Length: 145
Image (cartoon, rainbow, N blue to C red; front, side):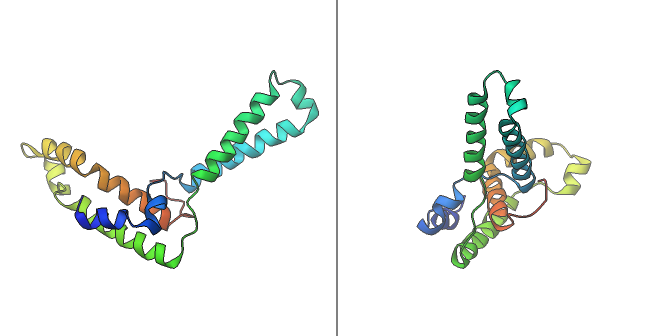
């Protein structure tokens, strides 16, 4: 990664936000449904009688709630949004550098697959940073990937 990306990434205003892993919206919605379903079961005395260990289920549900809270992208201030947007553009530019073209991937001249594998290994941190900043900037997006 470039020096500019590293300095921006280490900015104290966005460092804690950028270094976290976040769930996508569909994953958060799924987790919320799971939590709600378990709370319904725990709240119903008849259903609770059929459970072998309701305390363990409550503990697991509390862990789900904590994970959901930790992995939900936070609301960003305007200055954070600007810095993360700039970091997003820089990470995308860095990831695109040296990328094998679609035409080369389609016709596969000798060595193209090796070049693509090499590019994947080298640029993986930039791609992951770009994906993470996309999640932060578009927290309500329904995009799966």
